[in-house]
Image 1 (spheres, rainbow, N blue to C red):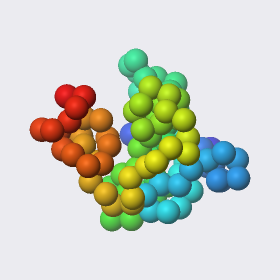
Image 2 (cartoon, rainbow, N blue to C red):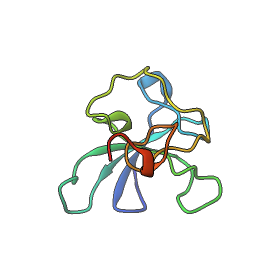
Image 3 (spheres, helix red, strand yellow):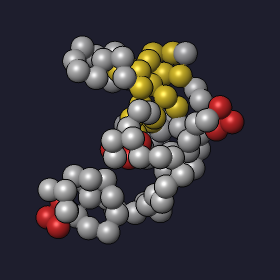
Image 4 (tube, rainbow, N blue to C red):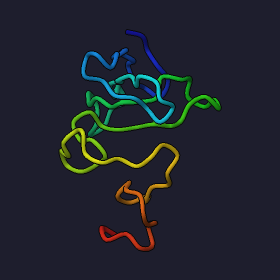
Length: 102
């Protein structure tokens, strides 16, 4: 474990341990929110590449709430890498102006 940027503790999670891949196609890592607030102590998946570089794909997903769906099961259909997602519901096929959840 090491401290990562953005007030999060970094932990490596190889796919064999139930992990997932980020949009770069590499094993995502879990981080723990360290910043005071309602999410302190909460785990999230993130791209392992250094944040703020061209190598980082900005992948983010809460461990306890995959794809922001309130507990959507893993293995459900996901957007293709690089697909544009709605900024409200994070699903492909529409934008925030046409979001059924917005």
